[in-house]
Amino acid sequence: MIFAGVDVGSMSAEAVLLKDDEMIASSIIVVKPNPVDSATTVMDTVLEEANLRLKDITFCVSTGYGRERIPFAQHNISEISCHGKGARWANPRVHTIIDVGGQDCKAIRVDEAGDLKDFVMNDKCAAGTGRFLEGIAKTFGVPVSELGQMALEGDDPVPISSICTVFTQFDVMVHLGEGQSMQNVALGVAETLATRVNRLVAKVGIEDEVCVTGGVAKNAAVVKALERVIGRQVCDLGVDPQIVGALGAALFAKERYSKLSPEEDAA
Image 1 (cartoon, rainbow, N blue to C red):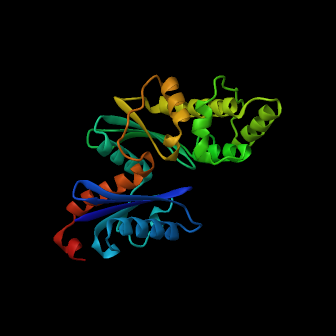
Image 2 (cartoon, rainbow, N blue to C red):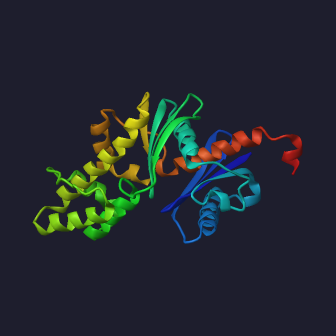
Image 3 (cartoon, rainbow, N blue to C red):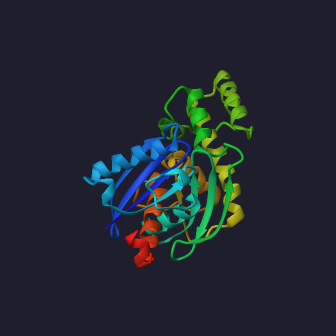
């Protein structure tokens, strides 16, 4: 049986296919203006990778901001639960998940089954998110994917005092105008983001192994800064951290299908 998860976020969309207990395909795309178009495109892409068709999917669960609008999903579940479930499946030692997405940041704790125990979320400000890094990258005039390596090349982080993304971009421009290197400013940005994220983590506490999910998890400088401020090493999930939400949705699809009555299954 084939189970699918699709995660439509604010900056990217992901899809994962499971066959029994094995992940057989995954895909990531930049979101389109319409969440339905994003979901359809990323699902078409992952199906093509697996040489499958939509009718081959036994059950699909959607998650993310656009989860309630996906026409081919039989059920939808919050991204908080999906990140917890996906991370726990990828690395069974994980109990604490820090999800830094494009538009918000979440600190999550899960139980042995990967089910939600506690969480806290910051969605009122873009500070400490992918949008924050994207804005800084535009100020630098570089792709956001280059920020992490640029920051790792710095040796003296420039303090970033503003807590607002817009004002931070202004601070960055001022620092660059004063002759600070982009590497040291980027390092300061990574330290600032990690400090903001840690305020959320402190509210739920850290239990056992901790991991970072979402696109920002690919920024090595931010992860390194997080390790310093939380006092823990971030463990490896063994999968792309950006697909963890979609992976969790696929796992929920399998669980949901197993609980269907024969009448629901036939429908």
